[in-house]
Length: 165
Image (tube, rainbow, N blue to C red; front, side, top):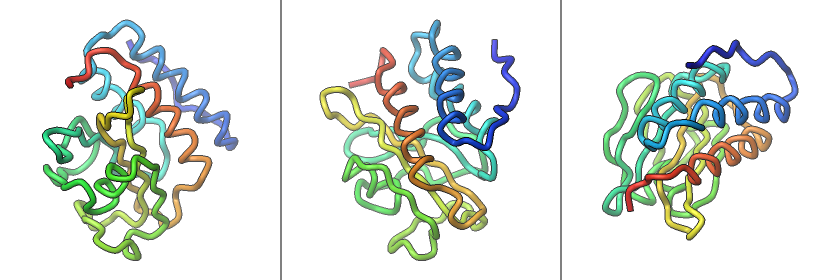
């Protein structure tokens, strides 16, 4: 059962270490990847400040399909290479977008979003499994420290058993 309180620190490195620790504990006994993604979305939604959407797009049959999330209803399908999520999926690189209005081809699911970060979830063999997408109503909400911390979260999620092939 999840009983953790809000992580209280201004040090992003310590914050993401604590967040990863919470996620590891939350997913340790659960073998179902989908249940773990649902809990991961809820945990991130609870712990991250100044966000309005957090969730996953699953790589299925050559496109991204909406998975577990917290926030307003979202786009259901995103082509690889389209928008921030599709670009991160295509390059398998984390994207930090300080101002979504300045990103060519940005797909807007929530008009309140001003910045975005997307971290690919990639299996050890290089296969794209999903992307972790987080939006904020605050411009320049995300930086390199957020990218680094979320990449560790993505690595943990990629290592979970049971992902569909």
